[in-house]
Amino acid sequence: MTHIPQFLDWRHARIGDPAPCVICRRPALMRDPGTQQPKHKVCAERALAESRAEGEAA
Image (cartoon, rainbow, N blue to C red):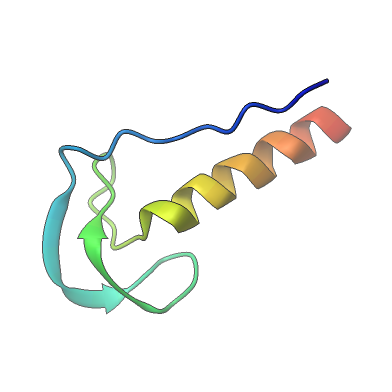
C-alpha cells in the first residue's frame, strides 16, 4: 500500500512565547490549534505518520 503523507492545517495556529514542544522538548513558538499545547507542526505530522504506521502494522 502506498503511503500518502498527511499534512496538518495549522493556518489558525497561535504563536506564543517559546515553550518546550510536548513531543521533542525543544522550544516551540506555535501552539497546536486543537489543544493549544506548544508543538512544532513537523513534530505533530511525524507523530501522526508514526501512529498510522503502527496501526497498519497491527
